[in-house]
Length: 184
Image (cartoon, rainbow, N blue to C red):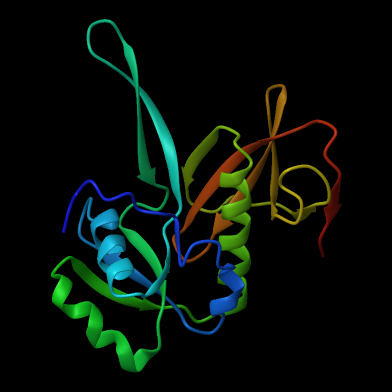
């Protein structure tokens, strides 16, 4: 298995996340093995979702900017497979445990919102824990249809998309002209 294989965020490519509703599970994998396990799943034609973002950091004496593609939810990988076929996963030697997703509809909705945040090409901020507040739905702009909590900091407004399963939130900057609807 080559370490230089390009790993997509979603496999099969361009397949909607909601198409696998009812069969989502979460793989807890060993540290820094998310892409390796994703490649393993891809070669076995197993549907998965691994949200990746470009992390920028300054390195070296001249403070050059290095961009690396890393998973948003470190140590976790979402996959869709029937329970009877989980034996296909055990020969990878990189997984820690398989976690059952009890609320499939909410999980899929949260993953779709994270995917829209990633596709918006805005700078993302990762935050541990869930962001409290009233839930809203975005009605316009690149995040249209995404759900989350509006967070105001200094002079900018952000949308916090929380994923309950991972107890983490993704914050993405909102345009001031974005239309928002309060959810009950």
